[in-house]
Image (cartoon, rainbow, N blue to C red; front, side, top):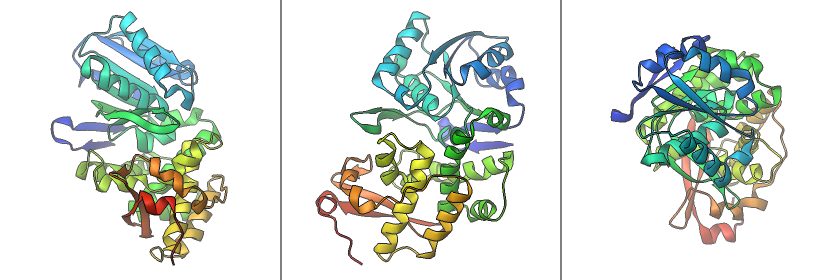
Amino acid sequence: MILKMNLGPNSYDIMIKKGAYNKMNEEIKAVYDKQKIYIITDSNVGPLYLDKIKNELHDFKVYSVCVEAGEQSKSFETYKEVLTKLLDLEIKRGELLIALGGGVIGDLTGFVASSIYRGNPYIQIPTSLLAQMDSSIGGKTGIDFYGRKNIIGAFKQPLKVIIDPNALETLPKVEFNNGMGELIKHGCIGNRKLLDMLLNSDVKITEEIIYESLCVKKNIVEIDPFDLKERMFLNFGHTFGHIVELDGHLRHGEAVANGMLMAIQMGIDLGLTNPSCYDTLKKILLKYDLPIKNYDYKEIIKNTVYDKKNIAGEVSFILISDFGAVFAKKISESELLNYECKN
């Protein structure tokens, strides 16, 4: 399957195909005509796929940089480490970077690509469910800083995204469940068909499921590539989720799952959300083994003033009136710091 991200001069193809890694040389030659490639991966993914990808890229000179697996690598320290190693390898302007890994590697590599020589091309080869059906497309890159997630970054679209669902076979169950949080989010905000499939059957993650999920993000990103209006809808579950994620007890998709429940409860309390959404979503999340922590959003809402969606003193909370009907509600900093729910 090929999905086209239509962004004018920054348009690119998203290839979703089992066995895609076996055709890596041809896929990259189609969009890149120089000789050197620099792969960035981590200590979990590297031993599984790095040698295979290098061997497939037989028409190129391939170099690699490996970082420690985990969210801690989305840091200034690791960013500096990667830049240093690339410059030691004598990377030149215009030479290609490849992000081989999950969301952390994709975000980190994209940020490196956006900044080295003021912008080198890069390709996403996502290996986790979370990255394959969400974070590998759309061009958001970044690192964590000052106790805040993704607070420093840039918009940098890839040349191409190559997704091989076979990579999910080596994914630990906890990481598979982690990806389900974002997959379910896409069903909640824009693809009721996807949500019904998840609710009514035990769905194996196929090319079709990945395609359906990516279509939700693709359609929104094409309307709003720089996250000024409609793209904020993709942050459903993230405003609260990022806060509990940085506590260190939940992975990203798990935190988003809990964040969605908090957003729905907030909408119900404000009289803006169909109350039945809460129990339906909770049922789906539990079905896919996502941990429900029963957070009270009112206890952490003051911390949302530090969210990236705080624009000129107003935070946009992404809520739903019902599944598939998403909207933003702006609340000022002063209201948040003295928040009391008014039914």
